[in-house]
Length: 272
DNA sequence: TTAGCCCTGAGA
DNA sequence: TCTCAGGGCTAA
Image 1 (cartoon, rainbow, N blue to C red):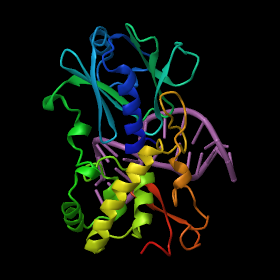
Image 2 (image 1 turned 180 degrees about the vertical axis):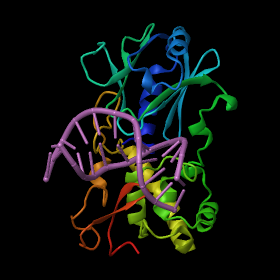
Image 3 (image 1 turned 120 degrees about the horizontal axis):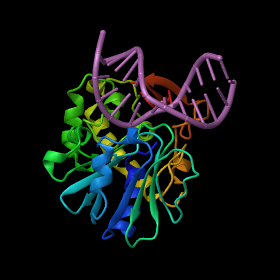
């Protein structure tokens, strides 16, 4: 499931090849993934130049000429792929973009269809609701402010980390990995976590996201790079997906609990 | 604050 | 055939 590091990798790769290219067409195969009318989408896209490609939280933002912005949110199983052939045989392809001079097609593929694509006017006013609600990125949070904000909340720490309105970009994998590396139990209420631990947690989150980004993200299920290569950071997971296996730090079996509708992996000995 | 919904494929 | 995986949203 793409979180900040996976989305960041895609953005860097897309930016390298697509900035400056002109879109020639959009073919919507499944309008359900669009938050914009299909008619408007297919009419507006052709002729637009790609000016910049960035990221906000887990949203991919593609600024186009004509004051339009194209947004992708990959949900759980969304993939953006570039290929030279209009590979329509592949399942679950919902959108295909073509370019005037660039010889490849951009495919949006999404097995479970939790992802969304929309076209909005550029600028503050056009921001999709999901983007407007986002809290700061982990690196944008001042460490002290982060600790202070979390300590004022009664909710369980893991739920807060998953809440995009509090911190943007974390999902289940990196929330669990960060909590384990900080020695904090996922179901602990944020207001009960020591200030020093929250300060450390902030540093750990930044470090985990940075390392995961450098290793090309985590491929657990569906995430792949633009050219379909998998990420590598799953090799460094200490808890996520390791139920019943030994904690690398203390040897205790990794356990799971369910929080905020998500499975949380943790070490009952290292995380208090 | 939590349960349920959307959705499909893998595995029991 | 049933259960589980989960990001983001809504309703209770």
